[in-house]
Length: 112
Length: 112
Image 1 (cartoon, rainbow over the protein chains, first blue to last red):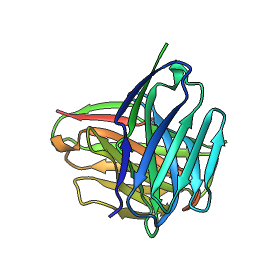
Image 2 (cartoon, rainbow over the protein chains, first blue to last red):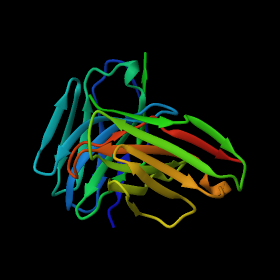
Image 3 (cartoon, rainbow over the protein chains, first blue to last red):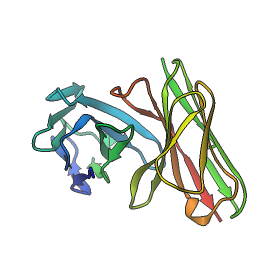
């Protein structure tokens, strides 16, 4: 059974810092991995999708990496801003199934 | 561009009452559609998915049902709500099995 873990559960950093969020998964048989952000009481906003054959994807100040063999992904946020405050979720699309398996998320707070 | 709409945003319903949540996608055809539930401390759980009109697959046994009466419309229903049905319900779509998933803004359901 695929399990996805995100550590830490919460993170608070001052504005301007570069930071890394971690995601690990137990079964490397995945099609892809997707990072989302969720603002309080809102839906999920897709940030980046990495296919299993890819090593990384970039969008603006965000960079996501994928090491399928070790079951790890990281989301790097450069020059953090207060508007980056949200819960960040990673999810893997497992082979042979339609569903995304989600981690519990990391609640990020950027302090001005 | 494609958009996804979910309504209502919030709903308070008494135990034993019926439920109907709607989700529609615009700007695409034949999307894969999904209903997830997000409960506090339990992460996101896939409830139903559909890869075509009239085709519904259930991931977990429960008090809910889903229907897809039109290509871009997905409905989540219940005949009699239970307290345990309370939660945050999210509709999602993607074009193909390995493409990016997009989520709606969610419906906060409170059963009282």
